[in-house]
Each structure stands twice: as structure tokens, then as C-alpha cells.
Image (cartoon, rainbow, N blue to C red; front, side, top):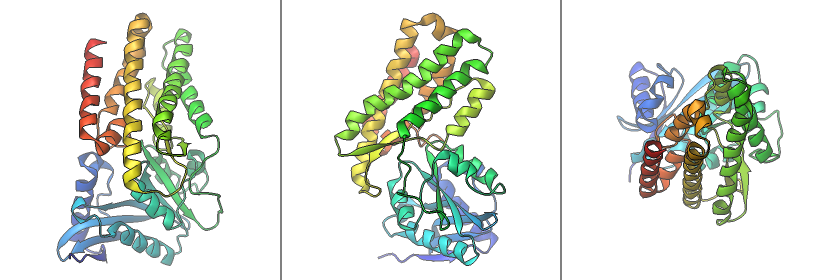
Length: 346
């Protein structure tokens, strides 16, 4: 039986070794946004073998940020994530940081359950961005750009019902899609003739994904829709500035706040596969039914969107392809082949 210890990061060597574990867990794509020299945090280890860690920052008056928490796959199953989180929460509490932010991948239910049990809750995207101090806004804004991830908050001064926001989730998701569709045409100098096309396509795709996902999700019991948080500000900014669309979509989750991970993994993987395929059908249908509009700019917007879905590594690990591959490599292979054929023939 292996015995792991949790120790505070103190030396440059400990900082570097802990950062190397983070790169191994999150992939090379996360390297640019990992802290270069993490000065505060803890690492999990067995003697000299580093297998996990957590990085902490003070980002505002009475506000702390749990920047990253990670455990190598070789050491999972020993509750190291919970032990690292407990150490980080206690360290922030001891320093008087009663408001604490963390970044959690939207479909990582092991992390959901862990943070929920330690008093964290997931606010709406508006509250996450503008509901706290101006000094820490930049840090929260950086978090909000990462697609498929959500900001979770532990705040003893605020009492909220439930762990996740539930009201008007589908409506909010479609309104964001509508605004992004408007921005694609209004601010990309494509002219007013593209205005209604942009609104219809982005909102229509979002609505279609909700419709095809629901029957698949409902097979596994009562569900609710979870509106997207991470990546939504990035999508809005890109639409306004460059006329491009960064895909952010919500998805259905069980009504219970906490559930068994293996059940959710299958349910989420199948849901992601059917929404991925529906996006390819829309792409192919638009190219055949409306070739002039497609060739005048719509294709340039949609092609990167379907490519992003097939990339399973960070920062794309919150999109369809990554969710599918975590469930079934065979289904993921089918999705990749279907994506390539769609691009080649349409």
C-alpha cells in the first residue's frame, strides 16, 4: 500500500517538480498559463516522487484563488485531490481569505463532488465576473475565458440556494448565442445581409444541440440543463472584434448535485457524441442548401468550429471530442473520421 504525504511548496526545486506534474496532467497546451514560479501551494509526494499539487494566490482583499489542483493518474484513488484541497482551503482560511475562487472542468464530476462537499458553489457567468472585488477581476476574467471550465466560489458572506445555477439556463444559453450571432455580422464588416444569417445559424445550432441531447440524457434519469460559463466571454469578444465564433455550448446534467462518476461519464459521452454529429450535419446541410452564403463567409466561421470539436487536449478538453474520448475511444475515432469526411466532401 502506497503512502503519500502533503507538504507545502517551499524551495525552487519543489516549485519546478510540482509544475512538471501539472504539465503532465493537463498536457503541454496548459503550459503557457501555468504559473512559472508557483510560490504558494502544496504538493503530494511519496518520498521524492511528486504526484500532485495545488497552487494558491491572494488576488484581492480577503480573496484567494485556488489556481490549479491536480493528481497524476498513477496516484489516483488515494483521495489526494481532497487532501490537497483541504490543505489549500485551510491555508487560505488561516490567512483570512474567506472568499475563494477555483477553476473546475464542467464535466469533471469528481472535482464537482469534491468542491461541493467543501462548501464551494458555481455562480452564473455574470456573478462570477462582476460579483466580487475589482482588484481580483482580471484573475476571474482569465478563468472565464477557458472553454468548458467554470469558476466555483466559496463565500461565507453569501447564502445561495443549491450548488449550481438552475433558473432560465436554456433561455440564457440561447440569448448568448443570439448575441454572438448578431455580433458575427454587425462587427465583422460582412454587411447587413449577413445579420439574420449569423443570428439564425448560431442560435439554431445551439437550439438543435439542446434538442438532440435531451433524449439521450433523459435515458439516464431526471436531468437539468447547465448553461455554459467558461468560454462565453471569449466567444463574445472574438465575435465583436474579429467576426469569428468560438463554440461554447451548455449540456444536460443529472438533477442531483452529486452523483456517481461512472454513471455520468457514459451519459455525458453519448450526449457529446450526438451533439458533435448534429453539428457536422448542419455544416454539410448549409454547404449544400445555401452554397452562396456558405462560400461568402459562413464556411470560414463554421469550419474552425467543427475542427475544435475533434481536438481532445487543453484548451479544447471541454468540447465534444474530449468528452467523447473520455468515454469511448472507438466513438471518438468515428467522430474524427466523420469530421474529416465532412470537411473534404462539403
